[in-house]
Amino acid sequence: MRWISAVVYMLFAGAVFAAPAKPVSTPEDVAAIMAVTEQFQAALKAKDVKALSSLLLHSNILWTSPASDKQVATMRAETDVNFDGVNAGGYSGFAQFVKNAKLPIEERFYNVKVTQDADLAWVMFDYEFVGDGKVENYGVETWQMVKRGGQWKIFSVVWSTHFTDQ
Image 1 (cartoon, rainbow, N blue to C red):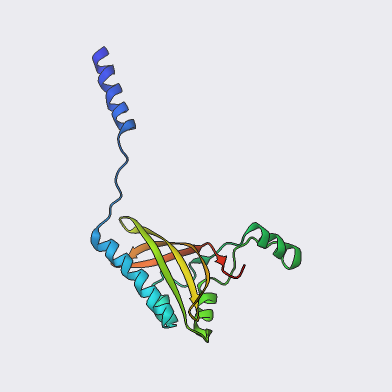
Image 2: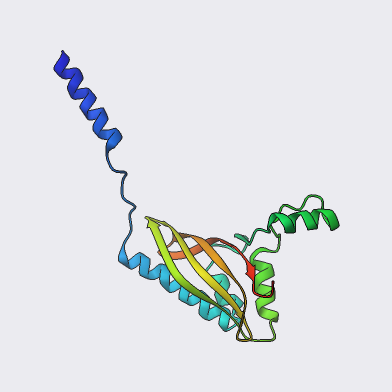
């Protein structure tokens, strides 16, 4: 009876101390995800909002750079007591900005890291947003992506913002 208890204990101990399962990732999917980042940069530079929107799961995805506590406090004091630091404009506001931009714009990505697990992926990178050849802001950006119908689509975009003029 003792040996059965010992075997059962060892089985449970082995399960507890076993390495976690590895994410399911393929080189083909990582390459397809990286291609979306390149398509995004090209569409932004071309001010092609239709091409940008084709990279999204839908147009109402989370798309925001949360405000700092200081910015939230200022907005609450001056304008909106309920402001939580997340702008409501989302992708539609960004698309209007891109479409109406008079000067050249682009976003440069550095240190791109892709983590994929089957039909989900996370893309994280350092970025610089450039207007008329000058860096206007920079930070870290993250995308969540999902594979639908064999295509990788962006379903959230969140980034930090540091302005170069401050």
